[in-house]
Image 1 (cartoon, helix red, strand yellow):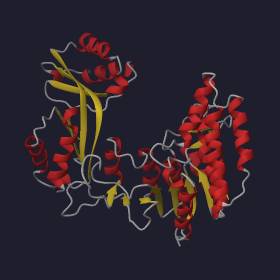
Image 2: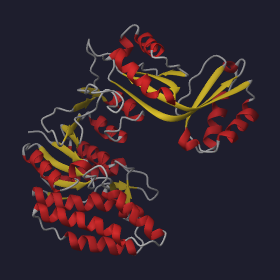
Image 3: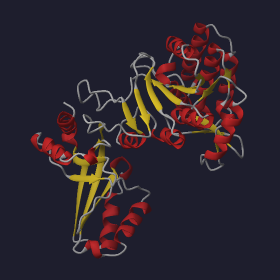
Image 4: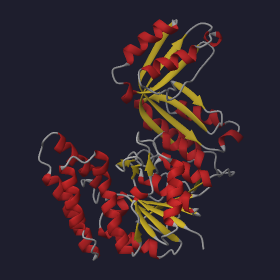
Length: 438
């Protein structure tokens, strides 16, 4: 029998009701050996995530504002879960210790990680699994760089001693001083993928509150089709553009060992979900895998005669962007034109300075700036083999009255990215979906 690693997100472990569903899933499948859990998420729309409350505690302390009321909310939630599940792991003592550490100046990473830590303690007892602290197996350098090889070896070594275990997600420790270090938000997905890789799992199941990925945002397209199967590469493209069911960095550990990732719904465990694999699904009736978009981009368009013949132009342009501590999202080019796409939220008030540097260093004939742009990616491994794909996409947008301001396509021909004005964002996605799916 093979091994499955199952990660349960915040909504799947938000309270005792959800944790009972988790237990039913785990106990119904003997292949699930290792369970990774997030901190409790929202129980209802206006509720707070425990991690957000923990961050808020730290902020209050830094500004010398009383935080006890917020901590009491966290205290009550964990005490209620422990009581409702009928387990005894002395959560009260753990909470007292955490509170003291907060008051003694504990780091923000330590504070933020305690939701996962406490939840894993409770769930391990409830399942009858061993508890393995992520601090003992996930390692970072003293500068916060993730130590991939060290971590992989440690996970494999430690978990060989545990037939079944529950592991808190989201954090590890710095190797040199033993202090807590967290991944970025949603990092429990990464922890699960790392455990799957190190244990040689056959499948990495990621349990959440949706039945996998959808071909478009359901807030824009009514009842979009679910994606049954998608490749790692296609998912990377969609995740980058905002399809956020799975943390995009979780793909790499699974991809390294060819481990399929199955996105499942804790509330509808019989749904097959979405299977993420190395090989794309190139079938006769599927041209695209999905559509996703992101708002708030600024496009700086540069025109200069004989630009293509000028050595070092791209290097100088990239240097200007780097000097302003920014990254280039896309760089569409023509014979005498080049556009640099930058995230507007990161750009802030640096635009005038960047324009001035471009004028000084690159001496363009003209510069055109388009703010409030949105990028929409149409993704599918089957697009490159189908004649007329681009024509269908552009015709759909034209028929919907959407003006395309920018076009970019990767060398893999797996995606076509168009830039449109933000007012056309939803119209464009509906038009593309209608052309390829409906």
